[in-house]
Length: 360
Ligand code: F6P
Image (tube, rainbow, N blue to C red; front, side, top):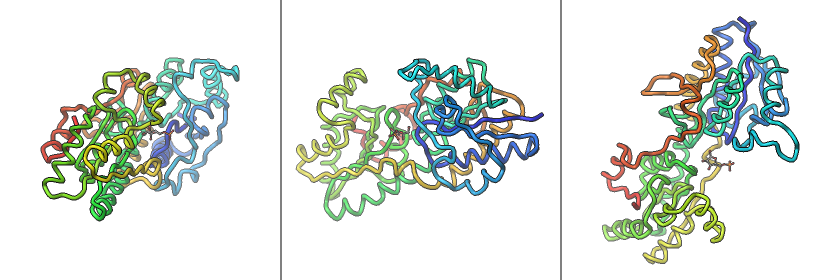
């Protein structure tokens, strides 16, 4: 049976988006037959769906993109909380998205994105659209999947950054703090911190005590090490801030002229230990460039599985990896939930048992 498939990428980009798009397309053409598949590329995420900015894609559009970073479809942040709000432009976004789906004569819609994207996917599914999600994010915080595509590429990049800080920290006898993306969840900082040999790892799930951080630094100095490396998640906060609501915390930080804690931690370490500290922020470099081999493989597996769901007309789901197997979760079971690092999990224990401090 013929299938007309809409596909969009939404939210922050990451390596592996194109590899996933390619995986879906190749598997659809292969399993359903090229003549039975029409793929419609929707530009810039839900924005393109709202404004009907679409283009017919051809098989050749999916060639040569396995290794390409970013997304050939373009992406945009379209906050979920505003989806049902009619703004100054007077546009009913949900109504428009349903209209585009109908006007484009789509049989289903594939949404590649993170937590926000999945909330909107669930909304559209509830509105009667045939939606299949694919879990993308360098944050690895989508509920119900062991891993998201983009995560391992970012782990490799962050690990490389932390590696490179070692020699310069050593030359200058400094404390080097590497701020790593991850506002809510500390997966990327935890994985790259351990892989890169950081001495201290600070993540949002384990609020830090600055005195304990300084004690760890001093302990290293006393053991004869002339430098320390600290991997800091951009969303981490201290034990005093942990007592506040998110909004109160943000307000206090705004008043103090800071967004992340990293520079503050560096200043406190300098002041309390007398050691020189520097901050490095790889930022969007973590989201750029080619996907790692791991992500190319995962993206291809996820894409192929999405094609199976299309063939079997199983909608209202998102692809996932669970206990090593590719499968799918119901959107209603995962949308709106976040997968956090459990402070008592095996990986945190491993880190602690090799002497890494979490400052908690
Ligand atoms: O969600 C992915 C992510 O890279 C987060 O880790 C980070 O906080 C955020 O996106 C940055 O977003 P933007 O690209 O909009 O600045």
